[in-house]
Length: 115
Image (cartoon, rainbow, N blue to C red):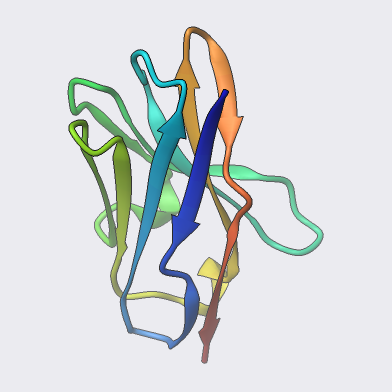
């Protein structure tokens, strides 16, 4: 089993920044893709950004140019730097990791952007 623990959420004004972190622990052999998803009230969970073990990244169109995903493979940690935050970025953000084609999820961290 792999455990994912997120941190860094909170309340910020529009235009501000937050940095999310997600640390993986447990039975780690090789984590493949890691990423961040978010779910706003009444909406489906959606991909925000993902990064492969080799560093290739993928972003949702709505966050391109504002968010940056990175990872530290030695620490089994993935980060999400969020800049120029908008009220529509308000959601619970979930960390995701893939190992041996099994998906693992964190418990989620709330991000609230006030206008």
